[in-house]
Length: 556
Image (cartoon, rainbow, N blue to C red):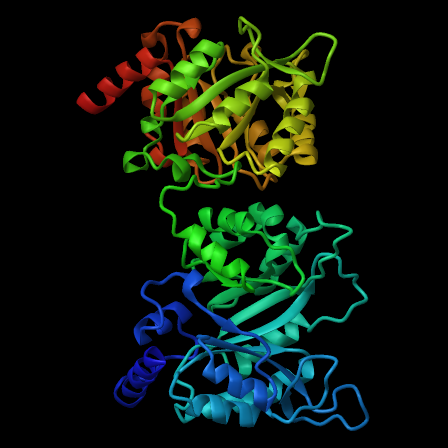
């Protein structure tokens, strides 16, 4: 109670003495300025659902909520008595004891200064509501962030014949009538327990981006929380398109949202990018878990290795690489080293496509056992699977899928094969399209790491080789890292320039080990590729070669 009184006093002073807060301003900035939150973290923002009727509205103003969410329709919607008056009602209700005019009058008079989120249930309600907001704002009565929300696209489990708010009309009305707002465009989504795997597709997310890419306001996309983790690569991509974008995770009353899923999303995003409109007790349990500094990060396996390892100066040279030859070597690395990328050569057992073996390991080391051992380590390890045979690819991906579904795989995971494609078509190697297709069909949540056959590298990485590899990978939504041999790079003057220009889209990994030649035989290629972006070039080098190159790089 004392906290509410203090915050009300702060808001009153701010309202009377300070400049008006823009209705299109940042919600976290506003709540931080008022003292509602102590840091700009979406986790700390609390919400009140469906503050529609006068009774619900009054209750919301007495609550600890920081943002009021209310539903807007027009009176008598869909009947012969439909009016142009915006009311506060959630379907199937089409009448209410509260109009938007009345709702705003009461909420804006409140000394608590709560944020506002209006959820439009029909396109007919949008224009008169925006006119009303514009009139209020002209008199500087609002003085707080306003979010404008509507389901404008079809989402998971919703057939196309179900009506959604017209996206073009909704967005154009906002630009014309009340552009000083945060836009919250969503998908109409339905969770069905019979189909728990249904989620937002890449096409759905790209369609949303195409709809709003030209707006200049802040945008917060409402996403059904129970479906977010499975679609995380797509939402992560969406967030990267603009610093103005955020997600608001919301929960249906019966949705089985888990704390682990929420931790996964939090661990793979910035704290200011995600709001959590989640019911108790899950919300409190999540907040408590998120505060634990010593918990293991639930990293997205297809994520960026620089984000995972956080090397000094974001320099890929500061990420260590280790080859797993056998059980003793694996255990030694896990015990003695501080972390890094583990290079695991993989073949399939003769006569069985269900068991994966680490190549040449003695005694036999099953990939399942190798992964289980890595999962048990508290240190940061990346997993680089160097697939030696075509028939090992699908079983390996299935193994990764099982680990991911079991909530075990929280390491950056790369899938490497030397492939055949276009002008570097080479018999005996997996077709590039088949390689990509298999990954996308079985377990796409990885970094795709293709390399070229040795047989085509006699002239180095020529422009035709690079152009065809880029053509194969340009449509992929995953992280892609081209695998390069240092000796061949030394013969690739034109190719080096082409590769370095590509690093905004593709990263580069240079390999050089004793079985490929002396350190000096690869030095020229290593030093040439060093001219590129430090955070987009990685070095799969043996311990001695890495030490030599580190010395030559930082002491020359």
